[in-house]
Image 1 (tube, rainbow, N blue to C red):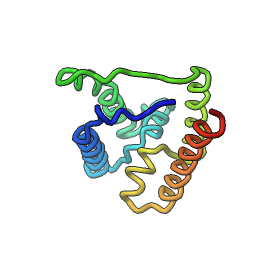
Image 2 (image 1 turned 180 degrees about the vertical axis):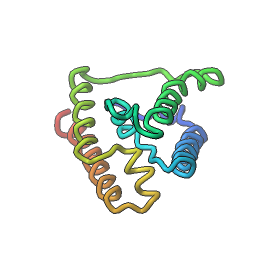
Image 3 (image 1 turned 90 degrees about the vertical axis):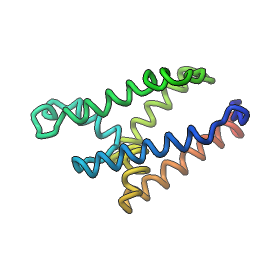
Length: 148
């Protein structure tokens, strides 16, 4: 079972991360009118015709490269936390595939619905966010109390 290490919890880091996500999302929608939904950005970038569209690939590629570069930039100022993947690797892969399926089924991911959609008062995003939060909590309950 995994426990939160409250001694190493840094609320300032969590706040800074949230502010950066909010600012990046706001800048993307204000500057070019696009939603910062990672699954949509990546999915569209992988389509053949995305390269031909106006604003089709440049901003998407820059956004994803920024996401990939951010841990390396962070590492210049502070050590990265130790990465741990507790649990069965097969279960982790299955969980990732289920998240991907849910993302397609819900027409977006947590960043698209939970950050951008809720800030725009989208009812569809509100329903999607409630759904993935409920099933996330249910999954944790089942994994910790039913199957453990």
